[in-house]
Image (cartoon, rainbow over all chains, first blue to last red; front, side, top):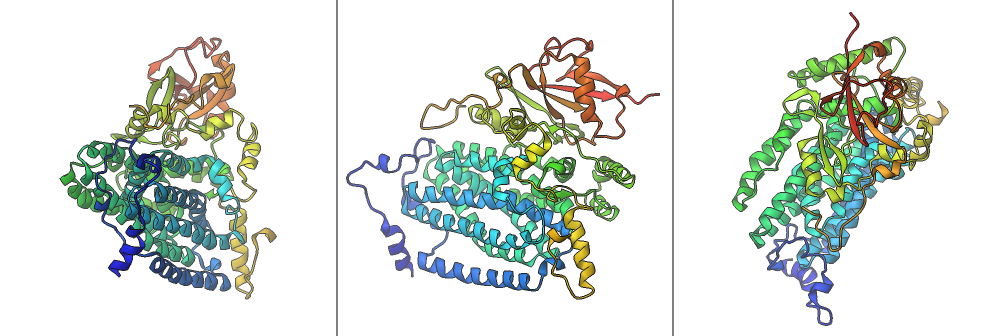
Length: 504
Length: 110
């Protein structure tokens, strides 16, 4: 097997004879990274293509059996509640297109990395990412038959305001050099933070009766652990190749930890507010998967190479008691313009939040939710009529507070070529000021609307351009999904439950 | 530190003032009211009188909070500095430039 592996991977390489090496691999030196020996790469997964396909085909068979069973037994009616699916809408709109983007860029690395072993690793990951994109589309499309918000997700990813958060992160990574991409996606995103995304999402799915999502999650998770191993191997390889690489890598860790962490704020809101049956709080997940495993386990190992924990990590720790609350408030303020619905948390849910966040919830957030409760009891529903100010780097509305004061919004501002740029935190400001030429081009949805580039000046114009249809957005209570859900469950008592949302 | 690239990396800002003609972007934050997740962004003429800006632009947005009372609005700041604006002075006269951030607070009526 070892020999076969070597024949099918490393031995497929050759020395160029009629073009110079720099012409064949034009992208591997301009970032300043020095690689002396590409064969020093330890292959993190010793797989051959035929073994890889056999293994993945078996996983796919199991996944599609679960999907068929769920569809045939009207499994969507056994979810905890239709409101749960708002988290899955965020997933297909926000995460699935990133899988496709990752597929594209790893395919590019599979051509342009100079060593045959890293090229093969990138090829496997490229195929994995494409498979993840496909399995997610297949899994989630079942819900599209019955529920709103799932129909135009790839168009929405390119256009809708909150989806510019994940999109801009990947656009940033894909427009960097190959080594920065490896540190951004393979290491900072997949190694440092992917557990925070996949584990809670999939446990949330399981707790709320969504077996198909849980199954694609498990199927993907076994690949994710391979991707994490690739991230770790990539960073160790680069650090071992040359001491001059260390400060470059540190800079990338500092940048990409913060960018990926900011994007994961959407997961924080999902975990704490969008699951009818919550699994664990964002704070608990952050402590376990990031503080214990990464800061406590990984970074002491990396210290050997001269690598320090990410700059601004203390701000992330300081925010763990408030991140989800601040982000869900954004979604709740503006869900009239989103492709999902939101609701004010119930009193039961608030009790859970209060237990999970004894230092902050009752003091800073409960009063606002109780005000929404009073407005709704009087027959209203408060949305914020206007457009939010956005951070130039992470593109999230400027809703985050100062590390030492949860009652004060954190404003940072920079001047570049006589223009003012606003950022939400020390982390985003540092990223902006490091490469302002890159971020001045940011496609900020709010400013694009005001420039007339998003379908027109009114809310209905913009929603139509986003591809949002009636029923996708606004308040969950009384929404098309909520009414259909109630009607189907009433029908269920008489034996018929094969409803279609459009009929309600 | 400049962007590391294989070519001369020089692109204009996507939101530079010239793209907005006689208008500009202005941000407004209601200090101390957590009902609003963040400050709001508006596109307004540079020549708009401050009084009109407050009544016709800020007011409808602030009224998203049903407890908003226009009579209580005050304590205006441009970034970190207090401003005492005449309602007739234009935004440009007050030094509120493209992407300027204004803050206000509300004092409940006694």
